[in-house]
Length: 132
Image 1 (cartoon, rainbow, N blue to C red):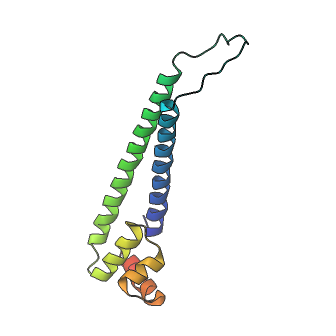
Image 2 (cartoon, rainbow, N blue to C red; image 1 turned 90 degrees about the vertical axis):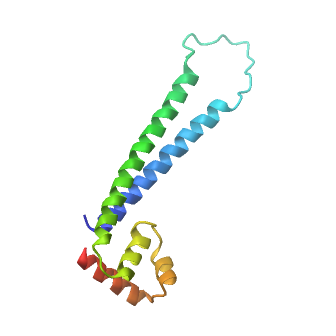
Image 3 (cartoon, rainbow, N blue to C red; image 1 turned 120 degrees about the vertical axis):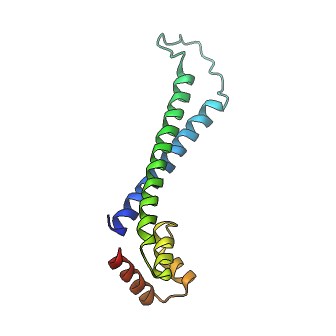
């Protein structure tokens, strides 16, 4: 797996985790909020679901489990990438790759933190990719 493929897959997993956590939290908020009474002289529907709340809570729990599974997958992916990074003998290459692909920092942030110009930073990155 190339570094770009790793980063693409990792970002997809991060988005999936965030989406599932937000959806689960939204369900919890909706179920914990009191609902206003609806007064009407119209007859009630016969298909009222008495298990609506438990169904919603179960859905939130399922979403949490899915997010946890995606997080485990992301952790395994990061571990594999970290193993590959340990093979780099140059600490600057290792740091640059770590900041970019593990911490998901932008190129400008990485170059600024490491004190590189864009061209020097891209050169270090290119060297690191060729070694990986």
